[in-house]
Image (cartoon, rainbow, N blue to C red; front, top):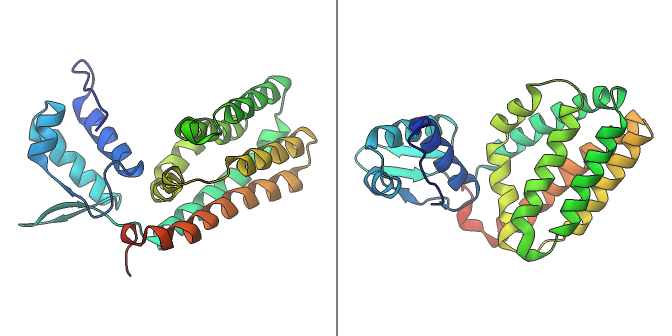
Length: 227
């Protein structure tokens, strides 16, 4: 687990975020048993912040806690993924109208720079960095709207969606298609064609996710819940 605790900051918050990211990025695999004792020793913290993080993550549906048996990483639930997808698509597309209304040259320059970074890291070795700049692109589109809290809401709601997206890091998948879609969205935004931009964004969010689900639920059957 790639986490160094900064004792000058909130330990509880760092532990929670670290374990959450390890689950989302599939460092902790679905069905894997997590030990308070082992994580406590690994992070050099007491068991209290570990236990509290376990409870919070179980409330988010990322962990399953069974008394007398232990704590396990939840399997990926397709229904929860689809719900996360609905929230993300709805909020991003709604915010995009306002983003276009407030569009300025600095926004265009920033979005073009993010696409350039995606191209720089689109090969397999740079895949994780590519997804970092992919996230930045979507965050920027929302930030432009002036709605300060929308991205935070999306981040909180798309935890299950992100677990599926990370599956694409485990196998070869064309990032060039995603970049092409980002460019199409940007072109529509620059043209201030709200309907086309919303259509392109909705299509981009839905198709990329559905594609991943269909492709990987067969290959990684053991990661998905059976219900």
